[in-house]
Amino acid sequence: SGFISSDSFDSGNAGNVVVTAEELSVDNDGYISSDSFDLGNAGNVVVTAKELFVNNDAYISSDTFESVAGGNVIITAEELSVNNGGFISSDTYGSGNAGNTNITVRNLELTNAGQISSGTFDSGNSGNLKINASDSISISGNKLSSNPELEDEADLLSSGLLVSTEFGSSGNGGSLIIETANLQINDGGIITSGTLGLGNAGNITIIANNIE
Image (cartoon, rainbow, N blue to C red; front, side, top):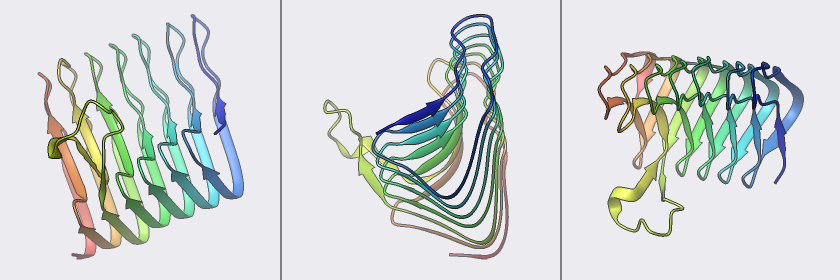
């Protein structure tokens, strides 16, 4: 595994991370990120590729852990596959708001607990999540949590598109907007906006020609 990152650990801002490739695979716990761990803002993460694969617990993210804003995650691709615990996210673990996540693709496939999400774990608001897939979105499958102490069915991780407020948080959830010609959800796949904290859950809007 390897990584590409620009992070802030003090009051200076993190830089943007911009990656352009014909084919890009982020695999085996690798990551592309721009995070803030102190008072400097996180940067934006912008990835453009013809084919993009995020597999095996690898991730693309911009998160904030303090009072400053998280960066936006912007992905443009023809084919995007997120598989086997891979994820794309913009989360807040502090009082700063998470950035937005915008995905523009032809086909999106989420399998075996592949996820795209934005969540809040504190008082900051989670970001908005917008998915535009001109041809199709397919969401299916799950996997057991990698935490060895968690073994029952409740600890299955599902493939899905998620905006959430987590336990102990007070920030509001963001909106989830999905536009596609064909949307397929099966075998435990999920699309969800939920609140486990004090904040409100966000709205879900789906515009699709076919849903099955």
